[in-house]
Length: 203
Image (cartoon, rainbow, N blue to C red; front, side):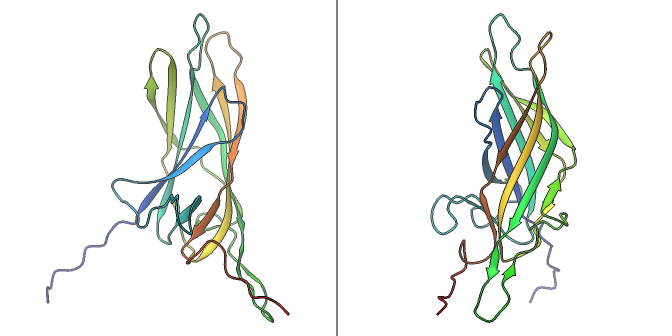
């Protein structure tokens, strides 16, 4: 038996990436949950097949950070998209039933799967770093990375998870800034063996 002490492994980290185009008509953010290449999780946090398909799948102990990507066309002979500022970014979690049996009080998940959130509504601190990801003759794109993380604390559990993002869009000298609100609302799960518990049939 080796006397070498075990080296603690850092927690797996996930990146919740949301995207929008400044000219889109819809208010829906596109989203995906990506593994941090330095601290990859197991299993796939963004499954497209099986019981967790199209849900955000977390495990207790993981850390989650946020990436916001916004882009827009450059307009000939007129200032195109220049930048965007995040005015607010709020994560909203609606807990779902985790236990329902005859003769037993129905049990719900906690207000949020994240230990930093004491309620179902959690506004992120506006602590983002910005860098240019696309800058060609037709399109300009900025990425803002949140400098903090959320800790996944509860397992198993099921939540409806939403994000509401307000941004100020800057289009250049002489153009009036535009304020837009975008959002998304997939299902999220922590641990467990399926998306919803099997409910008994009551007589």
